Image (cartoon, rainbow, N blue to C red; front, side, top):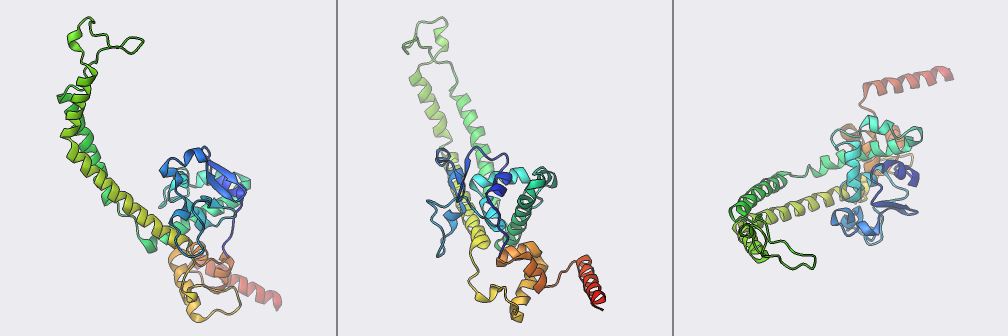
Length: 302
């Protein structure tokens, strides 16, 4: 089984991300007042549609106890995505200085974060990177829309001063230099004409944003599945017993060679010690250390 971590480890990990979360007995939850914001309301359970998956209405963002894979999943989006800003981007993190700042009691929290980043990279190697083409298009169209809207507002003199109002909210039309002021009706008419002139750009921007959101949601769901769904092929699930069939050893060995010990343990839901016992390391120093250990044991017995 994977190593699990407790509530106190989560409290240590969620530094700088405490305003929107609460730590209940069953896990990390988004506070009710923040659930109105769709970007924070998402939890991994929203994308878990396989038999036995938790109900997203009640499931915490991060359950207690939790695994490195579950931590990686919550960091994909929602309230947990802010942790990537704290600990570093997926391809370079976690930042060693930030990990060190967790203190002596943060040993298990550091281990969880290291495992989460390894699990993410292993999952991404299977799912693939999220295509950023649509995001770039959204940025381009957004820039064009804002630029053209500003020009249209300037052309229509949308920002001309409106007639002031008294304390009761009534217009004061007879003010000095009244010719420089416009009525509220004229303001809204000018603004409507300006917006109408860029309506096609806004439509294109919204369509691109919708497509980008859908693409992101599809990729995120695939990542959650890769991180959290139990393998369906029984031959991919190594057992903890003494005897492993050769095909199981080969599959675990291949995964360890590609992604490392921690990611292999996370993917197959077994301990790192079991991975090390059943497979061989590609690290020459580790092989040498293992060999010296063997010879040392033989010499001791002799």
